[in-house]
Length: 483
Image 1: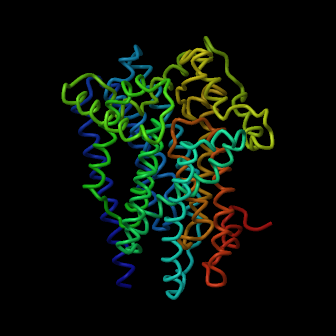
Image 2: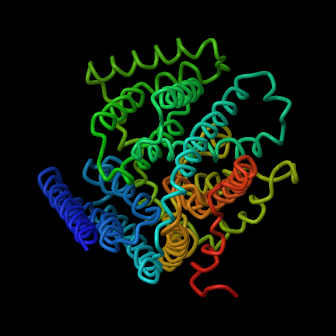
Image 3: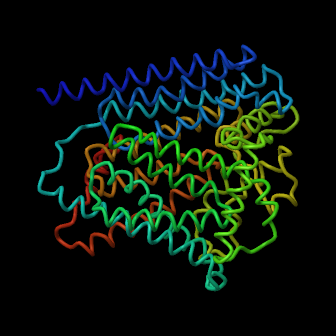
């Protein structure tokens, strides 16, 4: 009884913190906004983005918080840019900005309603026996260390002469090696919160992660590194139920400095193949440019400006269907072909085919420019480009089912069970807000295959004392039960 009361008291405290955070953010928006329409649009997106967080905490069901993590970023990508005048700088009226924010909020509300049904119908089971905890700790450490090693191996291959020998198999190698890398980052935070790592193991894990991040930054892949650090922070925050403020501030400061110098450093190295030997000098130069840019107060893109998808949403809505006809589902027809690995179908199109289609159709880029760069288009403007508001509602329903199902099968599961690994893969997938639906589903499919192979390899290595698979729970958790 005391444990139950303590749990409920903690839930109330967390809900109070969410409510306080909402009030503070609304207050900040009220004083910061220069137009009432901007404040209203910002508040609508903020409310819709924070609702799943409050619902997940209040339900007490646990599981991997896929939707709360994913939709919370919509505040960063749509709400915050509204306050910063992203729509105004792009030349749009207050009405256009507000309409875009309301459309995003509509998607979030529909998604949340569908997702919450899975929480209400979830069946909680008793925790696993205490004697399995030692094996669970050992497995988590192994998952983190081995997954980080696989990620480092992939980026080492990219810098080596072997990358040319892979040819069309590079995409398969990328999926097999990088999916465990992202899961390993989550377990890095999870294991740290649980105290599972010895001092030596923790030092080794951080060294491997740092080496991987250095190779990524050397390849001008700032977003990839930020995603992996975010996955580690998410694993820690949702396990320890507290924010490591010092680490978070340091990570945010580092990303901000690199973001400030990104444009200049990419111009300098646009036509240069960066070798491993060049990487330390590149990073040093990048860091110096970022610091000088900030210290001179030179105009540069902030992290929120870089993340903004507001102009894409507004442009799609203002042009469709008066000047640009509805796609009527065309962007979704590429999914089936994208699921086939390139090694089996060498003539398969690029995974960015939908992004390129939307970029050219709505004038974000020319066809020639799509060969060297891309402008991310979120699943909400993509849905509107296909079917208008009906498309937004339909994608919201699909997204709610997707996130709800994988959250549900992770409830009352061990951290190293296959359902939990699938849920983590789904969470890492949905935090990529700059991708279209076909790309997201392709990445998740590749990750799910890699995770399955990874998991059964782990079972084979640990033998009979491995954690239970829990596939019966996966079937049981389906909305209609086993068939």
